Length: 90
Image 1: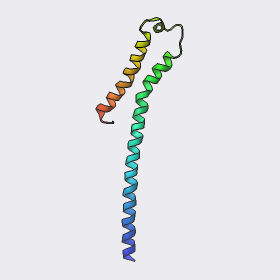
Image 2: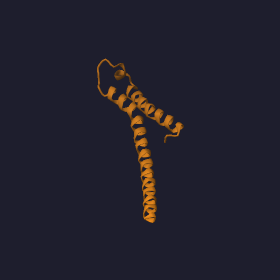
Image 3: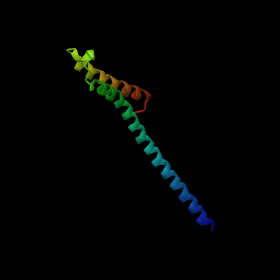
């Protein structure tokens, strides 16, 4: 009976190790999805504000208003990306 118990303990150890490795991989994937969501959140906010087309928005009358909105969206996406990259999260 001792042999069966030792083999059962070894099998349980291998199962726990495998589940632990799977859990670590899943955590890394979820972390990447979370970072991507945070990176795309500010440009989405800027695009939704400028997509409303209110007549009282002075940027709509500017010659470079469209370009300013695009640059603002680009900066708001690159900023979090660089921050997460510097922290080692990517």
